[in-house]
Amino acid sequence: MTKNELKKFREILEAKQAELVLLVRNRDGIAIEKSPDALDEVQHAAERELAIRNLDRESNLLRNVRAALRRIGEGTFGVCLHCEEDISPKRLAAVPWTPFCIQCQEIADRNQVGDSSESFDELMVSAA
Image (cartoon, rainbow, N blue to C red; front, side):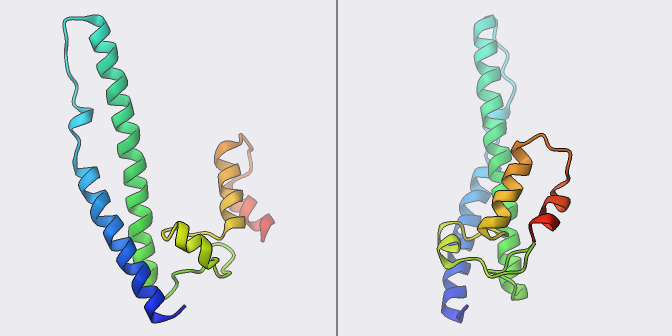
């Protein structure tokens, strides 16, 4: 990967990081609100649950973006963390913070969704 490409990805990742930091800091949606009406209580609880899920998703994404920035600094950006093959440029353009090539990501996704007793590491070893 050229220095210009790395610079472009660094800029994209830094912009995404700044955006996510602002979103993660906003925790107003998870405040517990009391209401005399039981239906309002249920509505507030549902809104709070949605805000917590969004915060969790944004926090995970922020961790992935920061990890990608570290990989740029270490010189390992664009290389799958599992199989150590190059991640396709199209995949990096779509998801610059991705740590895995498409094949390893599919295995990881299946493992998260499925109820298999195999660990992620065992699946990744068998896939390689």
